[in-house]
Image 1 (cartoon, helix red, strand yellow):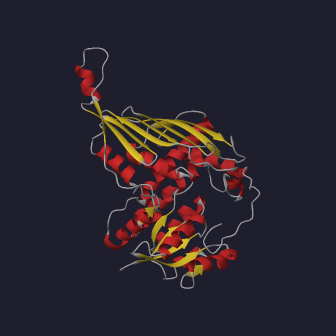
Image 2 (spheres, one colour):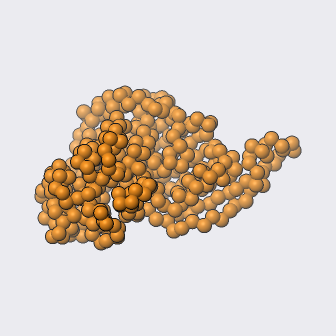
Image 3 (cartoon, helix red, strand yellow):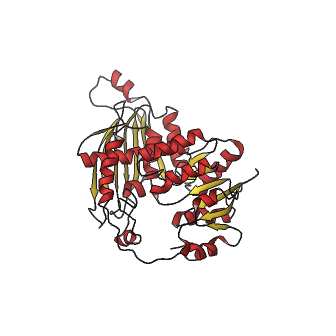
Length: 384
């Protein structure tokens, strides 16, 4: 292959984003050849977006077995991600799944098992990983420049969503429609980056507030405290009801501190490690000499097409994936554990009890109620 023929399953907001950059030729080694949406009432509007040369299907299996595509982007609501990804991989189709990988980890285990068996490329749309800011943070940590991680804090509250946003879809912010709120809808990228940078905790205690600020079933505010095997701690704070919001990541190590905020990376480097200073210092008050170091970082970029271009390189030339699909379960593990901690009002050890989580989730799904939906349609520009 000289290029990868893509299909898209689910032509809603994010599916339309993928369609538009593929149609524009932004990814040089990719072209859009087919799309699928089960709502046939939308097909005329979808045709206006994708043009006459792209085939439109209403059944995912028909798309996957059409011979028109080499790869697929799964861009449906969360619950369908594992089922459709497995179906695609079983049909020999390279699969790029939107985040989150699924709603609960037991569901995603089956997806990962299939990925290990099938000779296809499996990626997840974690488009924040290529961001040069986070790439540099990972480099500073992995190289040992920051020393041993002592503490991490992420305040991510710039997800403001009004009640009208939630009223725009009956499935939005319901247990049976999305399986969660801000953790599963807005925060998958940050939860993935958090574990990608500092690793997975050994246990956590979370406080999720359900429908505290919005008339929704699921969480709209969360505060979590995590503990790690080396004794490090972490705090994750998020909400959809704070404005102006904050996006601040702070990571402290034995050799300095990193802060990422407002598109900027700041790094304070200790001339000697805190451990070494503490061992030799005998004069009471005092602390290691510290320099704020300017680190060159490329312009911020978190476009979806970067992940898609990397995915094409993996399909065509075997280049390593920035965001392997098998890693999609890690951020989901964190959000599931946060829910479970709140529901059981206690600490949750990782790995956690997946059966207990699924039982408690199913209880909430059984009591879940669709909201009244505002009428909206897709126009020719791909806007709802």
